[in-house]
Amino acid sequence: MIEARGLNKHFGAVRAVHEVSLVARDGRITGLLGPNGAGKSTTLRMLYTVLRPDAGDALIDGHSAVQAPLEAARRLGVLTHGAGIYPNLTARENILYFGALHGLARAEARTRAEALVGLLEMQDFADRRARGFSQGQRLKTALARALIHNPRNLILDEPTNGLDVMAVRALRRLLRQLRDAGHCILFSSHVMHEVAELCDEVVVIAAGTVIGAGTPEEIRARTGTATLEEAFVRLIGAEALA
Amino acid sequence: MHAILTVFAKEFRENLRERRTLFSALLLGPLLGPLLFAGALSLQIERSAGRADRPVQLALAHAERAPNLAAYLTQSGIEVTPVGFDAAAARQAIQAHRHERVLEVTASFAAHLAAGEPAPLVLYADSSDVASAADTEHVRGVLEQYGSLLARLRMLARGSDPLVLAPVAVQDVDVSTPAGRSVVALGTLSYLVLLTMLMGGMYLAIDATAGERERGSLEPLLTVPARRAHLIYGKILAACAYMSLSLVLTVIAFAVLLRFVGLERFGMSINFGPWVALRLVLYCLPLVPLGAALMTIVAAYTRSYREAQTYLGLVLLVPTLPLVFAGVMGLRPSLLYMAIPSLSQHFLITSLLRDEPVPGTYFAVSVLATLAIGALLVGIAGRLYRREALLG
Image 1 (spheres, each protein chain N blue to C red):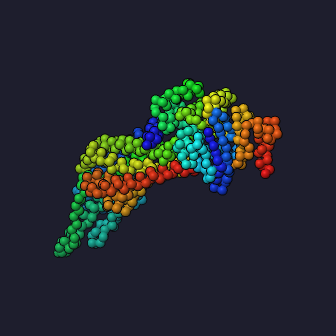
Image 2: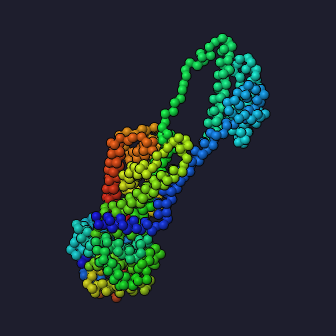
Image 3: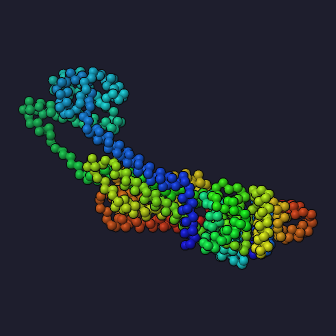
């Protein structure tokens, strides 16, 4: 379970995130929805321990990302924005490197990596150097890398950016599979239908604050709109007027 | 500790696959420097040796005005070529490199000589031509000898003792040791060794920091459950490994190539055997962590690979500074200077090649001071990785 409690973050004079609280439960896919520059990435970065909040806390299975960042990190798999991998290593070596950094024994890491190569259908390129990988191949490598230590919680920052339809579908399938296995999944997106398609829960964020949360149905009902997109526009509009 | 080794192993392996980097760090650098150095040295020796075997050349304009002088020059072993140049022609002949120097006997030479007044001679030479300067100096010396010979004869003719013209007698004694003389040429060796050593780890230092950020792989790395300082220590360790490799290869290249340079013909013996090579490596090794940490810090502050390259190019100049200071200010080794990294290594290397004994305390201070400053920089690099601005 991933929990944010009153997160705040400033960059100089810019207020990036203000009093953001949210809960992403196990066995659920939670979407963090918001326009560009709303503070999605900053919120996620505080959750996955890369940024320290100015105030508030983030709990990963009850472990504070501020007080015990290593304990929190152990329980997290992270797919960062852009999913950078090492071009001079093969896909498998990229994955195993993170296995080692997560403290996995060599044999265990190899077994896990092999399973992930199968799960993500990476057999064709698993042992090729990553230089020249397609966007989809890079994403799969980064995803396998994030899952190598079999984390209970998974955070993905705009995972479908730059992917073709087939790759997006494969990703959705995988995320549902992981959810059904009881994992907690939190991902950010600014693409409406993607969130509507995949999420069990939605947290809408704009200008650094949470302006709505609940299941897609709840949000539609509360705003009195037919689609999530209209609900989104209405919520953002209300915020902009406020 | 585990994370340090994991990062080290990965960076080491990744760099091993970067062909161009490897080529410049482990082949081009360690080979090219020593090769150029040995080449330039042997060329210099070749030329000065060739010169020594050949008589000094002198074009003598209007030799008929001073037949005794011409005979004296020839007796002194100077190869005299009679020419009929006037002043303009003499200048032109030197500018066109037809002659290295021209001595013009002026029209009034004989008359002045007969009157006992200073008789004018004009010696044309190009002082910017370093190669011929020594020979011109020799000709001037012979002319002065001729002048003092005439002076002594005149003194005798007037019944005076010619020795009154020689109130002091100066004798030159060259006390430089054979190995010491060659050190003049070998002064740049310590710089080349230090430079190549730094270059060996430069690309890894850039790639592991600015490169990693540019590729977007830094952020995922920071999500793993490892202390950030440990991640950077692993990277510094990998840079250290490549720097040490470069250092060893460079020293080996020097040891091998300098055997082919004919220094012994000049009575100089550079005792560059395996033992000296080993000590040279030992003297430089303490500088490795310092250099690796310094380059990592500089690269971590930059925003891109390209920017890092620019700044690290400047960092590579740092080891030249002590050489410049030592040269310009004529610094001699002292306990205080031994606390300055890079300068102390320069002194240790120079002393080693001069075959001069180095006090044990000097060596100890050099090692300890360099390692201490290195440790400080490694610590700073570790703190730097805790900064959030690192993500860019």
